[in-house]
Image 1: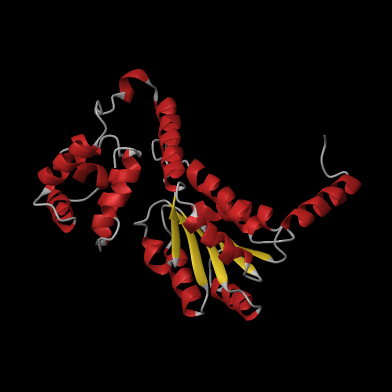
Image 2: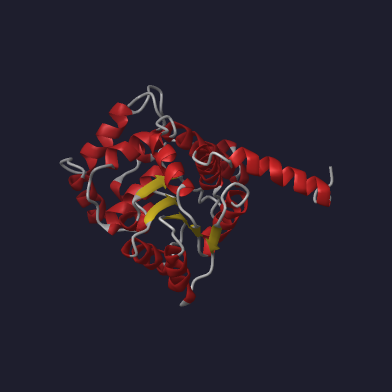
Amino acid sequence: MSGSSPAARLQRLFEGHRLTPTQRRIAHCMVRRAADAPFLSSVELAELAGVSQPSVTRFAVALGFDGYPALRRHLREVAPAGTEPEEAGEAYNEYQQAVRAEIENLQHLCDVLADPAPVERAGRLLAGSRPLPVLGLRAASSQARGFGYFAAKVHPDVRVLDEGGSMLADRIDSARRAGATALMCFALPRHPRETVDALAYARDQGLTVVTVADSAFAPVAHHSDLLLPAAIGSGLSFDTVCAPMLLGRVLLEAMCDGLPDAQARLEEFDVRAAARGLFVE
């Protein structure tokens, strides 16, 4: 595992284990602090994740280790030579640290995309759904709207679902009756209960759910047929979401590959835009 990023190695370590919500929280915290994880004490990790110290011990046991010291020892053994705890606070201000964290998130996404199969499968599912509902509530609403804006340039019927409430299930029903076979979801912290409920309902109605979430251990994981993780930054007062946004654009590219008339639609739009003088060149 030495040839990939710390976050990617942690993701692979956690895959395949049935973790409780508390344990998923610890796993998510470790992925977000991947460079520091091999050097954190159980007390420090518990404080960062907002859980109890015994929960950290149970988490390590759930992964197959005798206890947390054994887990930490394993992480140190697989870390690249010369890896040390980050001391970025001494050299970078808080704004720079936020940027560096996003760079690491993007590097992790790059590592994940070394296997393009999940994204390619997602692209086919989204391209084949008529209509294509795109869900994103609260913090994820801008991701859903951005995806929907570009998807509508190549897909004949995109329906953005960016508001909750009692009408949300009705709009999912409407899309399903119109022929939808898949639903695209963006899910970001803090995860609204309505998003989880909407995904469960969509699957009950027979839709295949493709989700971009901040972690493979997010609450929406159990209600997604295909979950694509993209880490977020949490160093500022409000989360930064460069990796989820980029993953959304990658999915759009994969979806275009599944739409034979995508290029023709884009060219047609350019012609109409020029005729209407939409853009200032």
